[in-house]
Image 1: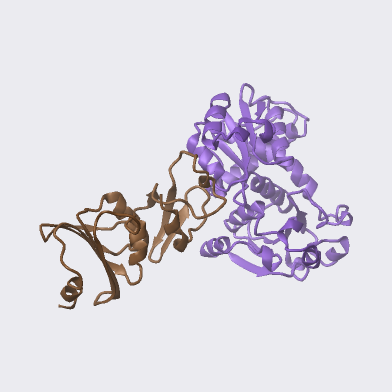
Image 2 (image 1 turned 45 degrees about the vertical axis):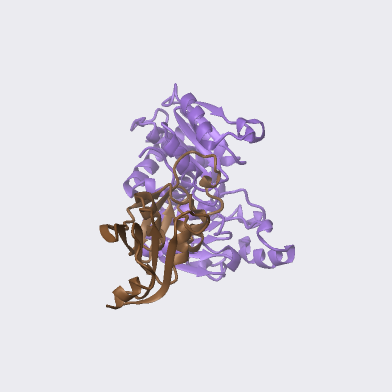
Length: 158
Length: 314
C-alpha cells in the first residue's frame, strides 16, 4: 500500500519510463546523468525521500514519452546501481529492466584524475573505467589506474 | 606478456627469470663480450619528458646487443608540438620500430600506447604512475647485494607521493614478502590508494616521518629526491628536507650488509661522504639499468639468451 501510495504522489504516466528505488537524495544526480536536468522536451516528475520498506527512503523519477536505452541504463548504474526501471506503455508496465554494471564502464564517463592521458579530448581510444567493487561502488581508470572520485564522476559524463 | 606497463604484467617467476637473464648478460653490458642478439631490431625511444639515465641506458642496452635505435628527439621540435595525439604518434612509430620505450608526463600514457600499438611498449615512466623497468634494475641490484629478494626490510624514503619509482618498487617488493617502511614528510606520503592496495595484499607496511630512527633495522634504504617546488615556501622545504638526508655518520649502527639505493639524480639527500662506504650501491644500480633493460628487450622481443655467453664467467 505504502509503495502504491508513493507512486501516486505524482500522476501515472501513459507512456515512458519509471525509475524506482533510487537512493534517497540521488534523483537530481540521476537527472543530470541522463541529460534530463537541462533543456528537455519531455515532462519529468520527481519525488524525493519517500518512505520505502526496502530502502528506508528512496527517490522516484518518471519520464514521459521516453523509453530509456541500454546506454542510459549503464549510466544510471553509476549513481543508482540497485534502481528498478519500468517501461510504461498505455498506462501499464510493458517491460521491467534492471541496471547492471558490468566489469567495465566504456565510453560513459571520463576519468576524474586531472593528469590522466584521457584528459586530452582529441585522444581517440575509448574511456574505460574498471569496476573494482559494486557495493560500495569503486571504479578505477583502465589507463592511469587511479581510483575514481564518485562525486566528481557525474560531472565527467560523456 | 605483450609489453611492460606495470609490475603486474610480470609474475614472480618472470621476474626471477628476467633477473637471471640479466646476470648472464653482464659481460655484454660491460663491453667484455659482444653478442648481437638484437641485430636487425629497432627500438623507438619516445621520451616526451626529460630523461638521462633511462633513455641512455635503453639506447646502450640496444646497441650492446647489436640493435638500432631511433629517437623522437626533442618534443619541442617534433610533431607533438603541432598537436599530434599520442595515438597518432604511436601509430607512426609502431610502423617504424620493433619495440618502443616511452616516458610521458601523463599518467596512463603507457597503457594507452600499448592499446594503440602492435609492438611491445616498455613504460619508462608515466606521470606519477609507474616505472617498471627501473623497478627491475632496483630488484636486480637488491638481489645482487643480498642474494635474495625474499623477506627483506626495506625503507623507502623521501618523496613517496610523486615518485613513480617507489610506487612500482613497493608493489614488487611486497610480492616477495618484504617488510616496507615508508619514511617521508607528511606532505609527501605514499598515496593512500597504494598503501591500501599493498595492505590488501597482506603487506607489512609502516608509515613514519622518522628515517634515521628506523635505519638500523633496514636491509635496503631506497632514497629519493625531495623537490623544492613541492613546498609552499623554501623555509618549509629546508625544515622538512633536512630529515631525509643521509651522511656517513648516520650509518654507524646500521646492519653491515645494508645497501643504499637511489634512482638518481641526487641533489643533497645523500652526502658524498656516503659514497665511500660499503653501503653505497647507487652507481652500480645506475649501471644495472643497462643489463636489466637488455634482459627486458630480449624477453619482449622473444629472443632467447644462450646459457653460455662468450667471454662471460658462467
